Length: 500
Image 1 (cartoon, rainbow, N blue to C red):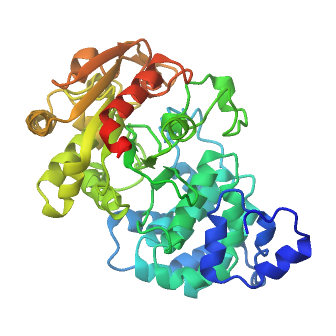
Image 2 (cartoon, rainbow, N blue to C red):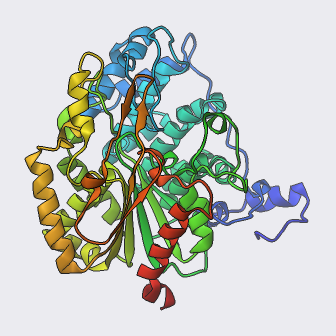
């Protein structure tokens, strides 16, 4: 049916009305399928009189169970239910505001971003939707329709749309909700999003559709685990996995973008643009190695505990290691040969995950199938960031992540000693890069985040590169040394596996 390009519109509509759930999802996940195969979503119910989207979201959130929640869900829920728009914005403010896409710097307290209240409600709903019984409540209380209204209303706000998609993707982990999700019209929205030139939008849609596709996909992709390749159904065998783990101040997509200038960041550039890619693993690596499944994960990090997002004990490397291991195993990581690619603190997470997996029999396949690791500026022996933050404490309250990077951290030394012995015993292949230039943090701080001596793991090659900490994982061009050496390592380390 994907080949039926010369049909009339009425023929597409006739066929679309006869689809069963499997066929519809299969078409949505097929590359090149015509969007006319998908009926538009059914009309949305009218909002209650004198009600608003914000109030409906608050009502939906209040209808969800509020007991036995972990501290992070309690945090977001209480903010969304109790705070006014202005105070919600203040919760996100502060002189320093470090987030997912590099080092954004908040210059003032005064602005209240659009959709702030909706975002806090959505962030709470994302956390609730990680609990299966809460997904049932969201569905029963009209959440699928309300989220669809919000998605359509905020076409000019990708952050809101991505948050909505995260909730739907989490709900799709529950097979008993699949028919309801399909009937509510979400598949046509997801099919359109899959064709978006925006890599983040397409990847969020791909995750949700993969969770809906129980016919050809065995794995389940939990929140913040994204398949960059292949995102469509394919007959080509996938022979190995490459996993990308970002670091402090990082994100699942933009950490791995091509090196850019300030001007480039403001431009709308499509995935097919030959001059620039917003995610080189998806654009370059997938084309060079189509037999790989490429996964990128995301987790919240911060430099500062000024207005911390969640209780700090949840941010430790040990906590994150267990959480990511669980999510990656659910995604089938360990079933194939694999390589880990990590930046900054992400490398410490990889080390911790592998050590943890070695102690748990149910995770043994992850150890047995790990072939190699790439470290981009990983502070194996600590970072000056921790010490520097103390001297500017009136501006920067160091987060737990930063404290764990202290050069005198006993946990960091134990992690390094234990992993070095373990990696030598397992004969892992290792390639490390390290920055040689300082990084500007905001407009006042200039810092060499990971000095060369801290990036020394003790095995494998260590290659200094004349870039700063943020650009060490962002090649300038596809033919640049950084990318070509990375590609060479992946191809050589997986050579036997890719031949089979």
